[in-house]
Image (tube, rainbow, N blue to C red):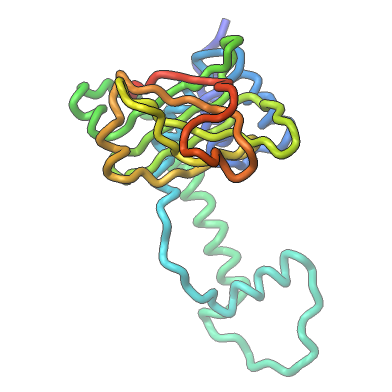
Length: 241
């Protein structure tokens, strides 16, 4: 019997899977859960929705000098054999070690708070305005990919749930199939890592519960015709989440 502690541990593992901080063995275990357990697949999709805003692009910035000092210290590299002035407060390595430790504690506490908060049901209007999701299943019923759509930021994240074998020179391509329309290409997707797709305004307008997502097998670089040319290996309906 699963206890509340077991549920919290599973919830944390699913969050760590989405963040990409699990080791290879733990990540493979979660991927097996996604494949075999619909509740686990739904939990991972929920964490993708909650953490997706973290993928927003930020402006590039030049690293401060203390960053290189921390890298040298972490990799145990020799210091440059040139005289350097005494570091000031902002370049003090020990100071930034303590600040980094404090930031880690705050981040850990934030995750704990998120896990402790009860999940609240949202109204259909709020849900539809924010996110949509799809489980893209293979012909054998096994989940091949999950897709989460952030409507506010016009972005879709596609995560492979089960490794799919493709012949050399062949690649998966994702398609949006609106009701009564021809498939619309969303681009080639990765087989072994998440793929981020920017959604144009015309694509956002076609996202509703009657539309489908499908994956076909195409030549490297994608379909040369703008329509699926190879077999469709997975498909799933889009729904509010």
